[in-house]
Amino acid sequence: MNQTTPGRSRHPRLIGRFLVWLWLLASMVPLLFMLTTSLKPAGVARQIPPTWFFRPTFDNYAQILTGGNGTSAGFGRLLFNSAAVTLGATALTIALALPAAYALTMRHFRARRGLSSWILSTYMFPPIVAVIPIFIYAGKLGVIDTYPVLIVPYAAFNLPIAVWILRSSIHQIPYEIQEAAMVDGASRATILRRILWPLLIPSVATAAILSAILSWNEFLFALSLTRSAAKTSPVGVQEFTGMFGTQWGALTAAGSLIVAPILVMTLVLRRRIVSGLSFGAVK
Amino acid sequence: MDTHDSQHAGISTARVEAGMRPAAAVTSRPGGGGQLGAWVLMAPALVVLLVMTVVPAVYLLYSSFRSESLLGGSGSFVGLQNYRDAVSDPGQRHALGITVAFVVAAVVVETVLGLLLAVPLAAQSRSNNIAVTVMLLPFAVTPVVSALITRELLNPNYGWIDYFMGLVGLPSHVEWLSNPTTAWIAVLGLDVWQWTPFVALILMAGLQSLPQDPVEAAALDGAGPWQTFRYITLPMLTPFLAIAVVLRTIQAFKTFDSFKVLTGGGPGTSTEILNLNIYRVALQSFRTGAAAAVAILFLILLTLLVPVLLRVVGRGTDPEEA
Image (cartoon, rainbow over the protein chains, first blue to last red):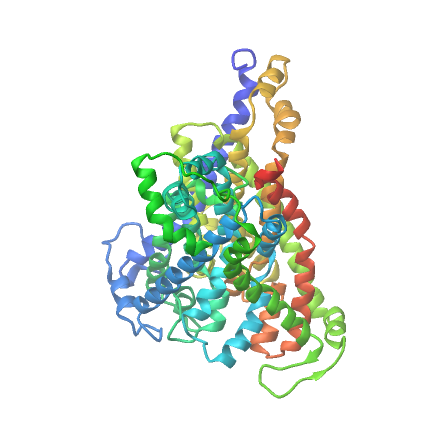
């Protein structure tokens, strides 16, 4: 094809390449801005045109981690809260999703189709609808500003994705493997522990990392249901922008600290993150 | 039954490891186990999901018929008054209108751009591998952080965007967030920046999974690249376009963070989408009854999307339906 019509096939291709590089270049600007500004000394952070050559400093990071810079607590404390809530929500998500996904693959379980569809359909449930009643009830129970009041809703909203990832990966394990083990006298517990579990570890990891990313990023519930003791970093970071202007160094350093761990996890998962977020519809 | 199994688990394990002859009788099939066992395994997940979705919705439905306030005091039954207000109030009709407009605009732009990026990136090569990884980076940024960063980039005095625009001869003192039109461009641009990689990767995976025979046959028949793409590739890509569009539509309806942080619904209420409207009425004006009615209408609107979600995503991923 290239030999017969070189011009016709090469032009669109070149335009496509150009578009990709233009997009990549433009989409890196915010990240470049965040990283460079966070490393700039206080004097040059807001200079226009931007200062490109400067001696990198970690002052901004040190400053926000020790606290007292416009926030009620040091930013380290908020990151710790985020980590605690994320770990709790991820553990709860997997603990709930794994048995549910297993039940949904049992061939004799009559309600499995209906339940699978219902769990998938809760993906459209807008969190704003849940946040008002949960706010009222959490107030009555006196659990506002605690970890569990974030952990339980996060786990619930992560469930559709986690259940569907795990369910389809259990489905992919040939049923004959389980049958063969059964014939060899293995009990259900043995089959679960020694046959299914090792094969499921990659999917459990994907579901766990996705749950962790979604919990780490969550803003609406954290904003409504925490005050100070359980405040997470996405809520805290926006306090660096105030009425009297923004401390760019502090804001970008805090932003970089929030983004760094999930950036790493995204790069670890790469295409599996998109596959997972599309409920496994895309491999 | 589970306790019975676990008591014998050790023995069975030993037997499997020693490679002994099969057990005399297979009492139950591994995928079997009766209805009760399955319901017991389902129960924890179901309870948490019900308590976090259905129970709040029922509670809101109840409060939507009452004049309730977060400040306390016992509300009274007002019938459909909250719904009448929600439908007739120009502010809330505006919120509904701009929510739908935002979702449509975001999904259309992201799908078109995603497709334009996916086609060149679908060819397997080392440089594409790197490009895909780099492309994924914006997608990995916490939405609150990307909204905050965008706000500073748009700062009329110190922001990089006005500076770069000035460099290439465009207006360089745009007060982005003080004007409804430019504020909309900003939130839409932020959403496109964050979510186009997701759409592009879905479509890229789709393109890579398509059979090459029809494309080669079309080339042999003398079809040009555009004809091949338009009449061969695009129709085969439809299921993947559907998945991307459905998922992005649902996610876009749930958008809260970027609006809250970047524009706060402003200037005025020009970018106050339903999510922000409900949040403000309920948790800042404390009129829970009024907010509940809007929330219930919003929930009904989104429930209309469920059949599409089940059809496009559910069928695509359900091995039993294949």
